[in-house]
Image (cartoon, rainbow over the protein chains, first blue to last red):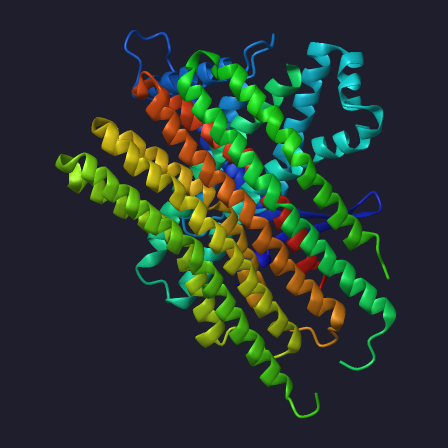
Amino acid sequence: MEDLTQVATYSFELFGRHMTVNTATILNTWLVMAVLIVLSLVATRRTKKRIPNPAQRIAEVYVSSMDKLTRETLETTSRSYMPLVATMFLFLVLCNWLGIIPGLAEPTKDLNTPLSLGIMGFFITHTAAIREKGIATYLKEYCQPFFIMAPLNVIGELAKVVSISFRLFGNILGGAIIIAVVSHMIYSLVLPPFLYVFFSLFVGTIQAFVFTMLTITYIAVATK
Amino acid sequence: MDGITGAELIRAAALLGAGMSMGFGAIGPGIGEGFAAGKACEAIGRNPDEAGLLTRTMLVGQAVSESTGIYALVVALLLIFVVKG
Amino acid sequence: MDSVAVSEIVTTLNLLGAAIAIGLGAIGAGIGIGMAGGHAVEGMGRQPRITSELFRTMLIGQAAASTPPTFALVVSILLLFGNVGGTTLIQGFAALGAGISIGAGAFASGAGSSLPVAWACSAIARQPRMRRSYMTLMLLGQAVSQTPVIFALMVSFMLIFLPAKPDAGLVEFVAVLSAGICMGFGAMGPSIGCGMAAESAIIGVRHHRDPEVAVGLLTRVMLLGQAVAQSTSIYALVVSLVLIMLV
């Protein structure tokens, strides 16, 4: 159990403050980023050829289905959020699947990764809302149904960040804890591979999709 | 277990209250939001052309129903971090 | 309290936790799985030709719906024979909290995640050629409605493996117990709600004039609605993690 709470860290002093960096999380995130960059380079290589390579065909299917999904959810916004949505989903799926490889850990198991993605979504949502509706209408919506409710509405908006990031974090960490405890109890016989398939592949994919869908839905509701 | 001070008792009661506030406070919104989601699914099944409108209405209704859950969260956090006994 | 040793109190609390875990945890799934079986039998009466397919769907759905009580059983066995918890008082209270957490969580999650099975069986009896779509929708809905019980299991493992605290007093005892109550009862509402959403998604597909088109759309709406409905259980998770960290 101890390996779940112990994260490889590196501490240093910066501007008189004590900073800690979770080395394992950052290295795993960089690994995912490298895989994504290599995949997209392979998919976009020599796009002028008449017969596209398989990677390009898969990428085209993926991008067009994500484009359709984004269009259906965001009916009225003037900007396209498809690149954000497609990248976020691929990134999260690869992050959640990473734990299947021995020696690597899911970056989403560390609260910092989902929380920073959630905060990023929060800023994108509110920027989009102000851009679409203007600052006056945007501020007026916080005073619904009457002025006294404004602090609670603000808390409600902040709670969305908590719920979206803790949903992903809790699912991935919960899966990791269950796998660790069960492996410890039965000496890693037979069962853990099935648990990995369920928690990493299945739950990980669903949660990545839910995170992405919620991000666009928050944008859609805020800009409506 | 001897010598429980009044301050300790208040702190313990506050923590128990925090857990109960969030625990029981989550039951209502959870069922209610699930009910809203279910009804939206049924309505979309009957009238698929209005899927966008129905989904947005569902989300707004869920957000309103969730506000009681958020109140429970606020009360729980206040009990944990503000009441010092 | 002079004549009772601390280790005896801890053992008692462990036993109580084990009993609450499986005792509460088995109720919901017991009722729900039985109802699923009832709907399947009704469907077989309506469509005797597809008896074997209905039987297969029912068994798969029931197996998925009995995951939460299995979690409760694991926690219960750990508390009874595992010898994993410590022997200090705080670990005894943590064991009781772990039992309440997974017991209440599994109670509701078992009931919630067997709701879609019943309606999937009914729907397959009416539209046998859509069997695969209904099964996928059912399994997805069940998996998402079991998220709160995964949180509850996580909290109870954290409580069971809580390190010993020599200077723990009443406040710490209550904090670990409260963490268990918070997560257990907090998981109840969302998992029943998510089950209701999954059930209605299946009903929605059945009412759609073109069910094969409806599956994709309704899966998306269902996942979205369930995700939002779960957020209160996530707040409960946050509060109980804070309570555990405070100790």
